[in-house]
Amino acid sequence: MERKELCAFGIEGKKRLVEMNRPQEWLIEQVAEDTGQYFDSGYLQKIWTGERNPPKIIASISKILGLDGQDTA
Image (tube, rainbow, N blue to C red; front, side, top):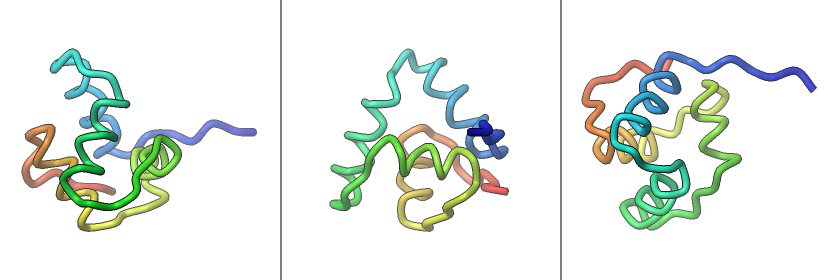
């Protein structure tokens, strides 16, 4: 299976997680708590690669990571 490249939002999000010294699992837990929606690593990967663009989840990730006004393209 071919590996998909990260979109701009995915690159910035992953960089920010490294800067914060937090694992992806932490972000998944935070987003699920913030939105009240089911959220897992597979769905996050689809957001990182630009396959999915759910506004509520994107807004939550941006808020948690401090990525205000980031483009998801």
